Length: 195
Length: 195
Image (cartoon, rainbow over all chains, first blue to last red; front, side, top):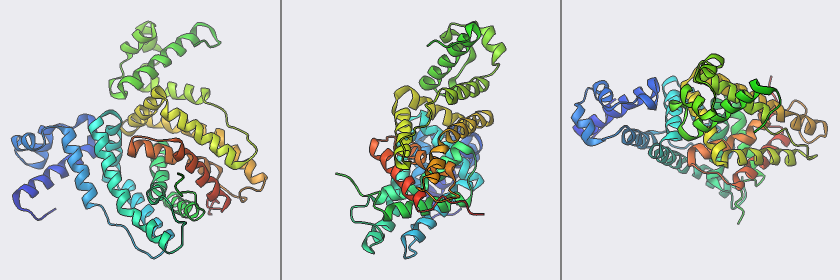
């Protein structure tokens, strides 16, 4: 994993990679700065000075994950774009490392205010990245004026996370249903803001 | 809180109430059998002998919560029933004690296999309780034959849990949109099983 920016950027990349590995393997409760420094092959003092706490590390990891996440699709139709989004979420949640990483961070957010704020920031960034798919659909006449684009994007992800957390598994049919249901409901005006 | 069944049932009710209080206040990571016995005003030996582990306690709490949960509504229309379901989930998740209890158990399920199985059992029971609302709607012609009733019920809850976990808040407009979107998508045949 190489990134531009010299030594500082390289250290950050190594430490965030180690943080993700530790989260995926052990969960938030067992995160430890010294262990992460060891995994990253970076001096403990550097990690303490630069991040100072595991919560700050998780927050920085989420900023990095949001920046590195796949950009939105542009397939030319609302259903196509929402299917691409559902497929991306499905691949992320079913990837062994990424899936465990996300469920660990969600768990952390339920008991740590700073982790929760960082997680909310991550999803706000991701939803904002994909919302233009719905705005384009409104311009094309595929959804009514006043449709809440962010609500449509959230409606695609929601069943995937819910299935995983409440049944322990998800499959492509859930992703396809989630995208189709969101597109049908958007077209019918369900997500038009009420003021 | 009184229940029929004499001393054994009373002890169970006291211990499960204390378990729920401890989960809502401190989360799963800090659950401790001795602390729960003290909160419940029940002998430590009784708690150890009857449940033996905090995971067994959480599993029993979830069985009790599933049994005690509100029965499905019968408003005479699919949209009415789904709105009643969304409203019930909203009230549960926004209730200070119940909301924290659920997010604590979801967090526990991400790192403990037995807690996860107990949680999956709880949602399977709740989804099965409400699925007949959709089966009735199919009989009335409000949704096509072959509609996956459980998928429709899950589609109502999903946005509420997702909003809470990824933004930290939910409000009645999310519940109303979730119910309406699920009803519209069900009517359009989105949840018809593909074989």
